[in-house]
Length: 191
Length: 180
Image (cartoon, rainbow over all chains, first blue to last red; front, side, top):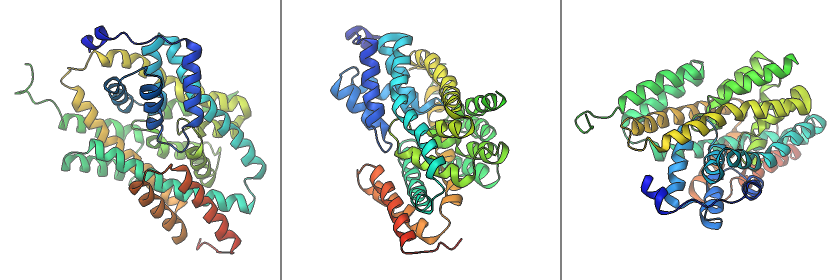
């Protein structure tokens, strides 16, 4: 990583510019798949990152708690302009969707009980289940390598959805077991 | 004030569960907002979650909707800050550290191990959501069609989801009565 930092210093766009670029992405990344929009915006159009750095930051975003889109905004903003850059990127990313969903709550209060609205909302809820399953399959294709990984998936899902185990317990117990299962092999290690 | 405090506590807690994406927090979101605090009903939660998938930006901006339903604009603001601040600070801090841990021996283990648990949590969220949303053969069919469409093509997910909504409207117009 140090070589990379030495070879090309990251660009330093202004805070306003960072806010604006993330605001545009936050307003146009319709229908999920925000990672694709981020890559187009940050790597292809602005050239603030190369693909290597993008994948590196994305892997951090996916491992840490938090949404990929906001984690990426924070990591990229920090890289470009430190803490204020992270804040500007985060605010830009969130503002459009937050404003829209706040307005949606008021619209729902005004007309959500109408039978036509209910029919529409029931339809999109069914469609959204399909979307979530696709997200799961795509996430799974990247991280599930061995039979044991699939067992961790099913055990976690069964514990939470089947037996009502609280998510933090499932996360800590299954997470610790899975990390231990994939523990570094000592023979290949540095010690 | 008590309500704003509850909103802050609930969404800050949920924030830390979003490993692998917002869906991982869905089971606890349902338990807390529907069963514990009675802020919204389960169908309302499903509706806001699905609308949130159509909104641009991060896919959990529906936390603002729940905050607004409970306590108006201050509620929306508190829900958003509580949901994004804890993980935001964590990412900011760990992100700086993590770059320097590229060669750490446990790093791949953590990434792969948490990855499989994250997929399990998304599956659990999908199952819980499906129990509420897929109450009839029509809705099961919609979910299956959207699933295969998005798996096999590169179309924007917003289109098939909006189409599902319109099919729901069409079914209502044709006086199709769900079996529930």
